[in-house]
Image: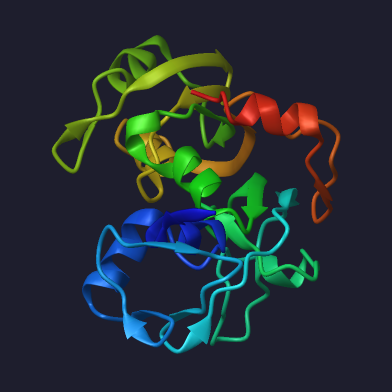
Length: 229
C-alpha cells in the first residue's frame, strides 16, 4: 500500500512525522536508491527505504507501561554510567520512551515503536492530561493555592486543570509537557517538591504496577489512550 514516506518512517519508530519531514528535506532518505522528496509516497513492503543509510523496517507495534523508579534516567543512551529506563524494559522490538520523566520523578512512563502514537500523546495541540502525586516541604495553604493558579513560567501561564490538596500533599492535573514543569510550578510559590510521581496519562492510570516493573498495554487500555485528550 502506498503511503507518504514520512508516515512510514514514523510508523517504523525512527522519528516523528515532523522529524521525518526534516530528514527528507535534508536528503537523508532514499527510496530505491534515489533521494526522496517531500510528499512522495512509497510501499513499505515493496520499496527499499533508507534513513541515514539504514533500512526502514516496519515492526509489530508494541505499547508498554513502566512504573519508573526514582534515580533512573529517561534516555535511550547514557554516557555517564547511570541506569536508564531502557535497562528496565527488555523487549525484542526497538521501543523508545514517550516523553520524559526526570531522574528524581517516579511513575507512569510509556514506551512504543509507534511514532504516530507517541506524537499524539506528546504534541501540545492534543492537550493530553497528565496527573501527578506531589509531596512538598510544608503544608499547602489557601494563599499557595491562589498563587498556583497564576504562575507564569517562560512567559506563559501554567494551565492547571485541577488540584486536590491535603496538608503537604497534592494531586495535580495539567496537560503541559515543559521540562520540570511541576517542580518549577511549586517552586514559584515557595514550595520545594520532595516527591513527585506521575499517576495517569490521559485515561490510563498506573494502578497497582510496582516501581521498576513494566507490562504491555491491553487492547482496552490502548483504546482509552488513543482517545486521551
